[in-house]
Structure formats: C-alpha cells, structure tokens
Length: 106
Image (tube, rainbow, N blue to C red; front, side):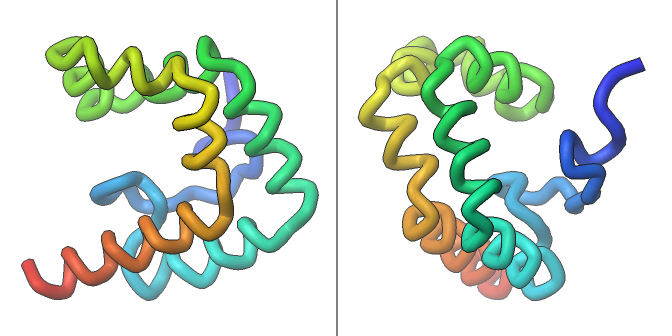
C-alpha cells in the first residue's frame, strides 16, 4: 500500500518547479500549511533526519536525477544548517513567490 496520493496529508498538489504547488492555486494552501504549528513541527522533525529528506527527494524523478548527477546536492541535503533553512516558513514562502514569478514570466 503506502501513503495516500498527496502524501501524509492526503492533499494532492500539482508537481511543478519546486513541487510546492501550482501558482495561485497552490500558494494559499501552502501558506496556510506553513502557518499551522503542527505542520511546522512535522517539517522540523522531517528536516532533522537527512535520510528521510533524501528518501523523499529520491521519489521524484527530477530531483533523483539531480542528486545522482550532482554529488554536491546530496552533501547539502545532509547539512543540518541547510535543512533548517529549508524548513523555515519564511524561506518556503519566498520559494513559493519565486516559483510563481518564474511561472508567470515563462
């Protein structure tokens, strides 16, 4: 069996860019999730386990190829300071804004 489509929350997000949702449709959901204390705790727990982060990244063919072709990416995914930065809600929100801006310009 396994996790429901869309992961542990069961909420399916379209796969685009950074995998954070699709433009205006996904952004409000992600922002709401980032403001949820339970979501923040879950992110902190996940990001404190480099093996789990790598396993999640390896499930996406694009990120798997990136990790396999660039060993420095795998090293960064094992850096606790980098993972802490990625789990910061402000960082995630900035990534969403960047992704939206890139989609609109391209």
